[in-house]
Length: 186
Image (tube, rainbow, N blue to C red):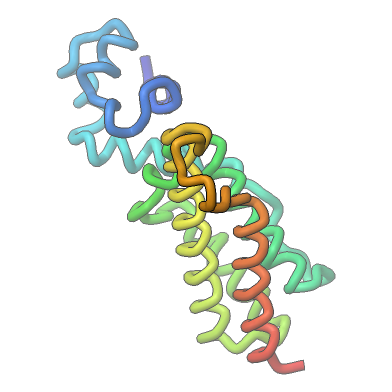
């Protein structure tokens, strides 16, 4: 057993039982070890959850960085969609990620910010747009994943529209992007 195995099994447990049911006791049983042996790798459950969040984000944090030839608008939209897709890959992915600190991703975030600024986006606007897009995405996925756990919506009133999460996400992303375009110098 090693740290990576513990994280992988914890993510498997997350997908099976959901975030509320993930416990070190359950994880130890899954790994066929005694619970105290997990403390060798993670001092607290909070430490384990942080490592799980970082590992769950790997598909997004290893996506290609923007190149000088990229159109910043297309890149911004694709980056935000990649983030959403990654959160949706795991049961309760948005809840796991919410409040986590992207410790291993700081250099990539700086490079993304530099790309936006070099492309003509004012630095303060680039920071706020990245933050707004991130929080919008987490919130959207939280709602989408909550709806998925509630069922098919058959218990909703007949006159209540069913939300198409993909369409709603794209509409919100377009609003953020359009607002940013109007604040960008040519």
